[in-house]
Image 1 (spheres, rainbow, N blue to C red):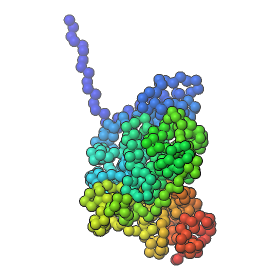
Image 2 (cartoon, rainbow, N blue to C red; image 1 turned 90 degrees about the vertical axis):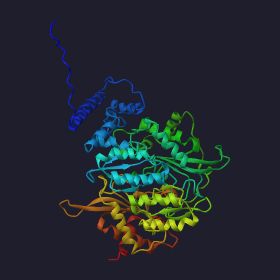
Image 3 (cartoon, helix red, strand yellow; image 1 turned 60 degrees about the vertical axis):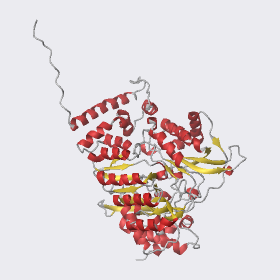
Length: 599
């Protein structure tokens, strides 16, 4: 018998990070090619009918390709490797402190991680906090995580959420898992997913409210978390629940707006509190949520929202990211047809009532998010803390958490106005809580300008932003506070790019960042287009342009001029800036403002 010719196979050497990225690109190219083959007329699909939780998304992509259209790159990234199947890749990158590839930079947003280079060579992490309410120990835990894994600070966002910044790739996994350790999560808070669920910040403690939104926001939050088929939409998707509390939630700027209303008897729907349904809000594209005539029982809100999202999944644009939001589906097919498709998903008719079936909603107070307010529970109060353009240090976060635990009910309530409330503070503890907040370098009182300034991250932390919005927002307020006395509510919103995260179009005065040319050679500096006359809620309207390409250094004087023009030309002390700006046009206001500027 001859010698044994069987040889033992050698164990392949471990692949380097560069080799792993090559293999990922190699497989991606093959899969993209497979998708491309389907665009050939008469070609037979290479794959069987999609099944599983991603099937609806795959079918929508396949339909696009069969029509001879080209999928957006992000759609290909989702198809090639679903982000929730790629966690080990994120861990591998953390081990070597490696930045993500472009496909991974998109995928990791499914975990709430945004790599923001070149603004910062690090990640930003955005959380999910249903209704914007978390417990004191969670807030303190986030402070510790921001210090250990990030830059030692956090931002409160315009979706009543928290962002942690300056996270090196090596710390990304530790941060994500640390967030889950304290009972929070960041799953689906970025990319083409349903974003943080907002609700009335004073839910359950507000004498004005018609409905406590917390259980409905919470139900929708967990419904999303536990259904993978609700991830990977054509584009991001926002949902808000407004219980008609005293602090506005800006629900009409969301894709789905659930606004609590009281239905009168005699209209066949059953009297009581329902949600009025609005659809397609996206004020960065100059559109508020459209009235549908539909009302929804609060207990059915999650079921109806689910059906709406699934119609959007089927019909949203997966080729053009700029036209992929729900607004454009409604533009294309109309609200009646869209609602018919929603009813098909539900398997029943939606309830419709005429406008006169609804009682007027309680009025909101544009300054109720700041200062001390009595709760509907006798002897208890909430305290609205001023956060300059939403920024908090870790030390301040821990301090506020302790005040909430020791002197309040333990809740930290975030608002869409980039600040927070400490609730459940007994009358006899208000003075001590106020003093303790002051020891942290924070305040509970502010001028109308300080209380109303909102700013996105800006170019210090966002690659899309053209200007340093947070810094400029503070500068504008500091300049104007010393020179102009405003005696009523007034909002100034600064946003860094067309995404309009700070919603400049709905503000009394809105600033949209731009690059302003300084010479014929093409050199530019930071600047803004300046708008006026925007509003929300019962005053919803998109603002109009007053100035174009104002240098950032000149923006404080330009805003001062608008404020002086208002004070000099209002019909009475009762006329708000909003009312004043609505009765003049852009050129007239510009002329008035120019005359009022003091050199």
